[in-house]
Every structure is written in structure tokens, then in C-alpha cells.
Length: 331
Image 1 (cartoon, rainbow, N blue to C red):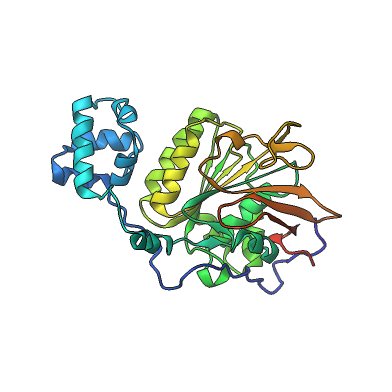
Image 2 (cartoon, rainbow, N blue to C red):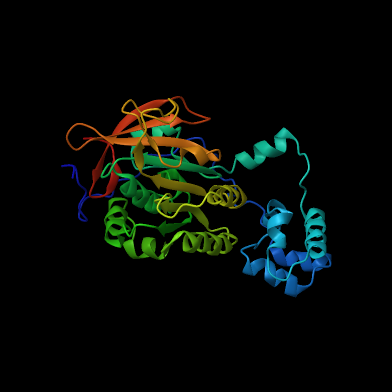
């Protein structure tokens, strides 16, 4: 534990302000509920079948392959084709102008990590509409960063937050509400309110983990969530999970944050491997992931975060500490 702590009686410490955001923009993307299909000739019983399979919006209908939709109990190939055609009438799935896409990207928010040093190498923080993965050895702060993000995501944008709720899927039983409370006190917010704004699920196995992802996806249609954490992704991993997570990130403008372990691989590629040959266990399936960060222990109580793969920022590293109030800069 770092010597720099923030007790409940201390002055609230604001999060570093995240950058790259435009104030006054509605963060919610247009979410067309799957019930809209009823106005285009699809009966409610078939709509209920879609919802029971985790398909809660028209955009999810469009992004789900026909092959997978036919697997939904009660939907024939003819019904699936009719549903697909109805969805295309509701939402444009063709080309748009680059200006239209730029308008969508204006809604991207960077959620502060709690450390200015860390935010700087990420270009402002953990971004919505994307997946970020952090990997590292035991006790380097992956879960602590996940806890800190749960709090900061709820803060005003001027404080580096995203003004939204968080969802936390815990695969290893490491979520600690008491840590959330301490971090909330650091930022001067009510711990009870912060905890109420975190949807928590304990994944028991890979199948249950997928069920939790589908279940929380239905809550995202409310438009009030901005962060989904899976700690850790590899504990109950299935290959098709990343594709589903990427759709959730883009469709509902949330940041997906994954923690991961490292394994030894002397022959790993330079892109993912560190100097000691370690690599994230998930790297072969990370085509959707925006930022890949490696965490390791530094001198004394300091930890080192290295941004290894990002489409937006150059490779760089920073130091941070784990304080009583979560992730912070060294004193």
C-alpha cells in the first residue's frame, strides 16, 4: 500500500480531467427497441423469442448472423429472413458519409483512470465504444483499476467521468464493495449511491458468464450505462465473447474494460510480449480490442503501465500507485 492515502476525513480529490470530449453532446446513441419490429409485420410472439435470446434492439437483430438467429428456438429460416428485412427498413445498414460517422464519434467519452500519468498515455482514459484490455502479473493493480473505473465512470465529465452506471462481471470473486466505498470517499461522492449504480454479477462458469453478458445487454438499452468490466476475461473464456462485447460497446456507447493474466511464452510476438517473454493469454483473439496495456510492479510501491498496442496513441509507459482511494499518481 502506498504511503499516500486519502482517508474519509480528507478533502475530496478530483479525478484528472479526461480529454478529447466535447461538452454538451448527448452521449446516448439512437437505440431502437426490438418491439419496433411489430410495426413492420413481426408478431409479438417472435419478438419475445428474440428477447429471450438476448436480442433487445433492432441493431442487434442486424448484427446477429442469420445462422445464429435460426438457432433461436421457434424461429424458422423464413421467419428470420422476414425479421431481417423488417429491421433493414427501420435502420440504415448501408453507407453513410464520413461526416455522419464523425458525429457518432463525438459521443466517445474517455473515462479517467484516477491517475493523470496513466490518462496521458491513453489519450485521456478508457474510451467508450471500444474494448480495452489490461494484463499483468499478480498484485500489479488490475482489479484495483477496475474498481477505480467503476467510481469515476459515474462522475461528471468535468471530473473525468462519463455520468453513467457501471456493470461488473466478476469471474474470480475479487470484487470488494468496501474498496468501492473508499474510492468514492476519495472523490467526495456518497458510497451508497455509487454502489447502487453498479450492477454486479458473479460468473460461475463460461456458460454463466455468457448469460450474464446477454442479461446486462438488455439493461444497456436504458442508455444509462457507460462501463462494463469483466475481471478477468480468461477465467471462463469463450471465443465468441469478444464479438458480442464489441457489439455492446458500439451499440450502447459504453467502455468495455477487461483484465487478464500473463503467461510465459519465449516465442511470443513483439507486439504483445514484454522483454521477459510474457504475453496476455487472450492476445490471439483480440482483433476487437482498442488498447492493450501491460502492468508490472515497479520500484517500492509503484506500478508501471505500458501501452503496447493502440490505434490512437504511441507505445509509452507511466508509473502509478494503488492508494486507499484507488489508482493515483505517485507522490
